[in-house]
Amino acid sequence: MSLAFGTRKGAGTGATDPAAPSTQHLLRRKRRREAARTLAFLSPWLIGFGVFFVYPLVSTAYFSFTQYNGFGSPTFNGLKNWNYVLDELPTFWQGLRNTVWLVLVMVTLRVAFGLGIGLLITRVKTGAGFFRTVFYLPYLAPPVAATVAFAFLLNPGTGPLNHLLGELGLPQPGWFADPNWSKPALTLLAMWGIGDLMVIFMASLLDVPKEQYEAAELDGAGPFQRFRYVTLPNISPIIMFAVVTGVIQTMQYYTQAIVAGKVASGIAGNSGQQFEPGFPQGSTWTLPQMVYNLGFQRFNYGAACVVALVLFAISMAVTSILLRRRSGFMSSDD
Image (cartoon, rainbow, N blue to C red; front, side, top):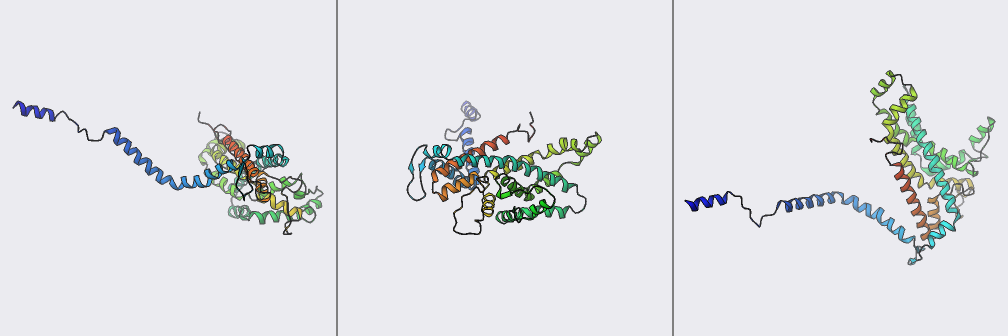
């Protein structure tokens, strides 16, 4: 009896098999399976990110310290490319000033104009679909065709706009042929194709709760107060999106500026002629044009990579500042 009782008592103590896996080991194995499954789902994005972003960025950084013309083998030359671009190439600073001007002025006016058009169309009682179509259609025009049309429209000698300004007794600018008016002309072209921002702002404005407008109106808030304290807080994420994407797009501004310069200079219709971007007098010269000019026209890939890295660094810095919660575009929860 005592032996049987002792056996039963030992069986009830819950003795574990030393060969059985521990709880921690099972948890680690489960975490590894979950991590592998997550990586499997993320693998398409990770591969694309590595191939189309990380590899080009690392290669650009490498080539910026080499002498490379695209044909032979790159040879390391230290900081010579950086010294050449920053100290010996005056067009770099001119292109930087023009790019910053376009970012500050063009992005601001596009966002303000797109928001204003969106507000007006949401207030229209009849014909909203017609006006929405009219303002959106210019956005669908190809950039080259739209720029060529604007260049002829704003031609200082034969353009209908200057003719109309002359009939009204107003000054007739040189537009794309005048270094003081070329960037404002490009800004007008960008504002003409405002359809993308208009649609985004209209969708956000229509999503603002009407109850908040009614409550503000009952409290005696006027149109400006309702816009300031009801509309802006609700659409602030959309404004942030429009500003950030506008900055990124403008930092890559290339096609419209170079096409406008070619048309205004008279070279657009003459094939085989060498064209130096920036007409007139470097006023439309931007950093993306400089990257193309140095890399594919002068075959100085090292210097072109330096400009590309500077452009990337500025874009990242500006975007990081804008994305801060206390940047003024989005309210903080603190």
